[in-house]
Length: 226
Image (cartoon, rainbow, N blue to C red; front, top):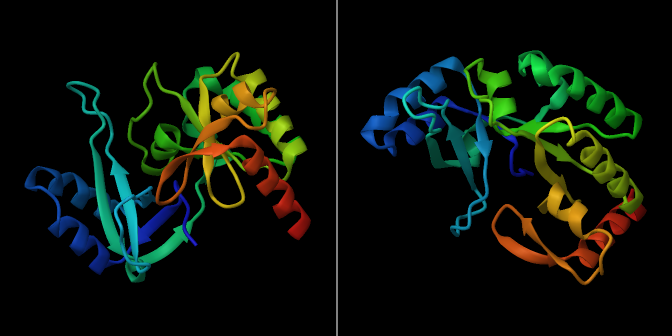
């Protein structure tokens, strides 16, 4: 089963199909990506497609002239996915982040581990670690994924992120058991309000406004099954 932000490595046939569908001006950059052996990233796709297809994307490094990251969307056959991995653990990206973040991220990682979290990284932090290319700028955020086990675990995780966001530009998502993900800052802002509040939840095939109470209930249901 695939989730947003997962990493997938394509077969030669998969790459042939991706490159054949690209505008001419993007072929060179993606051909170099293919030859380097770097993965694609699983993305949300609201276009109806068969169960044998997967939406993926590539974010190229910021262009030197204007700092814009060109994003390339593609769809591939699942049969052409040779390898599939979860998002990069934050720990694997620690050596490639700017020096100004390292002490803060080490403290965050240590505290997260103590609370039973394995923090995942995506976006510019993960892509710089994976490719060795220069993605991070002064204005960059640190995009993290956190998967709580139950409501108490979720509250611990939100408190942890909020504390460390005082010294780090933390962004990212809380991922619920059914794969829906909500921005942690939005969740943190509504957790102390009424459970009837709705939050923006992203799934593989749609974005929807989800009742907070339903998301919290899904955590408890999953905890009971494990």
